[in-house]
Amino acid sequence: MEVLSLLIPISIGLGAIGLAAFFWTMKSQQYDDPEGDAARILRDDYDDHPAD
Image (cartoon, rainbow, N blue to C red):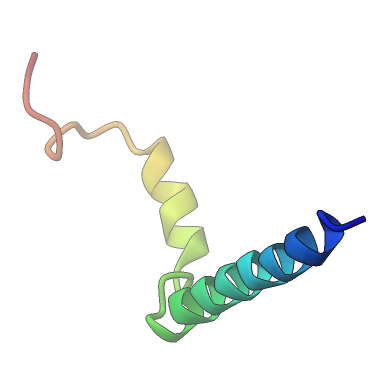
């Protein structure tokens, strides 16, 4: 039971860090164009990648 007094605050802290990271990504507008990202995967141009 003594372990729970250590694990519960650690898990709450890690959850708060994850939530803060999610809000930071929302604030920096990383999810603005999901349709464009999905269409970009399907394109057949290889200009972005160097030739092997």
